[in-house]
Length: 458
Image 1 (spheres, rainbow, N blue to C red):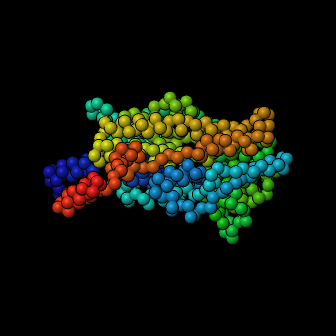
Image 2 (cartoon, rainbow, N blue to C red):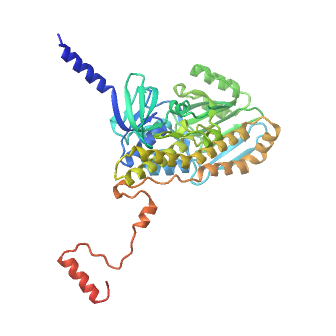
Image 3 (cartoon, helix red, strand yellow):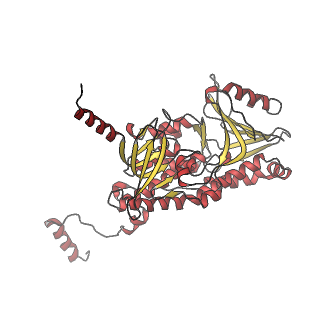
């Protein structure tokens, strides 16, 4: 039998275990969350990532990464693990099945790579310590404790009763972000479209070239596919105002029924080879550009990144890339703050670092959301003038312009913590030019200096 003293001590220990203190807490272990954790690790900060699922997210079978995304992965130090696995698509073809006309689309710079979402998540997670991600951690509430001046502490309450205090809180919890709602960001807008996505598996291999294939007709359906490797393809169907919720077999059947009479047999064959466990249906949502431009993207030491900040339609394939950009930019500003404060996380200065991050990302995010929405409207609008522009000019002129708007962008690098230099401008201030440099002020060093002075080489 335990004494009252023992019971009291046990109760105190349990309470202490339920309250944690972290420098940085990231909500969500998706692309944005893991990439941000990696970026912070590169600048010497350990972040705790909270994920409500039991493991890495399996939703979203594949994604396309454009050159701007690969620059971000370079900065994070993980691109080398992914590039050998996936061949880039340099071009694509858009087939009008009503007229038989085929338009060629050239992708900017080095083309695009389509990869398994889970492979990207695993590549990022491998860079983190095993205890950096806490699964089965569902967010219940958020508080902000003012500490005087600009300093504040974020307090996160989990559904299991755990309380976590942190100097920085970053919401990377997707389109239905709890953190974004706490900040007061505008509600999402339904685009009026939805998408079915999935993988197709050909065990004996397929014969498709490494090209993106899109199809269109007089309806508002837009199917397509692109190879991932020699045996797998990523395929999709974007529809106007369609609801395909249900079991995977039902979704596959509805796609086949919708496309049988109108679209080529090669697309139907891809759908028939679908891995049913990979099938998903979702409405296409976005946050209005003015909601991003004028919205409150941060409050003190709390901010958002990825889909929590700028959910967008997938028409330019830049949602994942934008999340990677967010991670690098946020990591850079936090890293610079740490360098300027002698390696310390100063809560008051964190608010400024986050504010600088928001200023840098606000307009970039708004432009990407706008360009993606316009691209989708042009490709699937049902007005006669939209169809005319789409068939005659969009893929030849406007698509490449919109794509370049998204792709021709470099989010920058992370600061070098070991050198103690926050950015290149600081490096230039410290750079000097000398004819001769002598290391050491001992007898040899001073004697050499005197000798050089005698011959006019001071």
